[in-house]
Image (cartoon, rainbow, N blue to C red; front, side, top):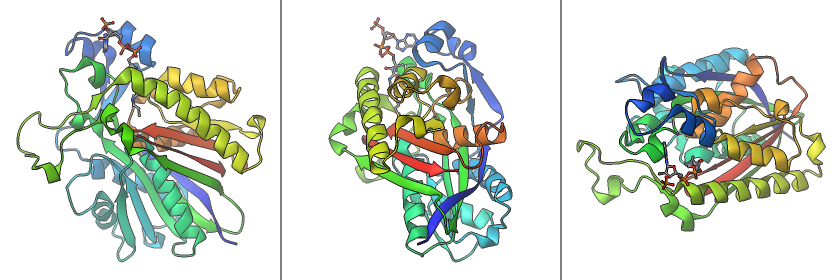
Length: 322
Ligand code: COA
């Protein structure tokens, strides 16, 4: 049996930092409100002209280096993004060209904040099925481009960034299981209600923004993430105490705390980067993962539970032995 294992991780954040104090000058908000309701202190924002593929490229190069691989060894590229550079080609194809990789399958996955977890599920299954042996899995977003900077209920929450993982074929797991779910009935609670097929005019200013019913999303996220934790543990016959690290989607410290409580995990075994990154959508889990690996907190052999929840609604988890 062939499994996939995590060979290396990488992350990249754009240079510009936007603090809560900076936001006080843009909308009617306060550092205190944002801190208390979300845990966010600052977020990174892509420079004018800096695209999702630019961020993805930096994160990917770092992940490939950490894996001790050469770009030419990559035989599958999956990019999770909600903010592609172009309608087409996919950001994965643009990234493939940047990395001077030729011929392997490359495509985008769109599951908003759950995108990276979806991409890991797809790549893990490709490796298990024998159709790939070395996959580059990326979550990358310039989510700031979808924000209405006049809407204080959304613009304070999000940021830009990219994270990447190299998965390679292995005789030992690796990825223990992936769990992917969606329910499109909840589309209207968290959405950008414009798109190509509706005749969206991309040149029109302020045309497509995130809209969210925050309170309802919050409750659904807490309940759903609790359920996905149970599902993942049951499938693997594990107890809560078997998990060494929770790597949650970084949307709101209160949602993260609720999931940690459910797992009875102390917060020093939960990777938390929301204070520095805000919600970077598909980039949030791999950025948090990479930060903890590079700080030397997550060690080889430890059991990791990644989970995410996002627009769609979509939700899912990855259980892995690092
Ligand atoms: N600054 C100051 N006040 C704000 C504000 C801001 N940035 N945004 C909203 N408010 C106000 C509201 O207008 C409301 O005022 P009112 O009581 O006078 O009407 C008050 O704060 C409370 O708003 P509410 O929406 O009930 O706050 P909340 O405790 O639910 O927190 C969120 C709001 C968005 C932080 C929270 O609902 C949340 O995190 N939701 C989930 C978001 C998420 O994770 N989305 C992505 C999922 S992938």
